[in-house]
Image (tube, rainbow, N blue to C red; front, top):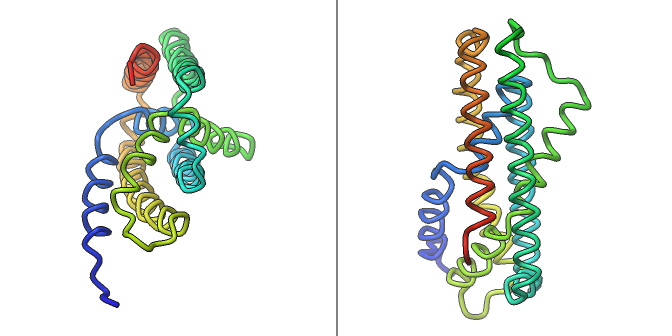
Length: 212
């Protein structure tokens, strides 16, 4: 048995490319950091990557195939996920508009409830994205060798993706946190929160109108 697995190397490269492409995950993490600080960004990242395990498990046991095969179910999940992103974006836009009149000078420290909310937002944004299910269903089988146990192999590939995702989002969160002094400036924070909200609304709208 060789220790070198070219399929795992290839998957790592593909997963890395997919992970670093800006999208809803990065916008959502930025929103968490802007509103509740770096710790909330880390928790949101964990929630997002937890969703990857669920998608991998669903793909391994064939549930994702049901979702993709059913046009009505796929469209419903896609619409719910899009509306969720839009709602988060609208919330950020409203906060930005309110902050124009009286912006807080500091990022509010996250409470236990905020931590649970940050995790749930990351998890739900990932679970309600049928494109992730489609990605796992179409990509993972290409890296499953003949004779491999499908579920175990899927979870291994997901583990690689989770490690890459966590590393990237943690680095991204840390970099945003380093800009804490800059983001405490009312005008800068208002602009950033408005831009983040607009991105979430735009991504949600694109998901809602995008065809398979």
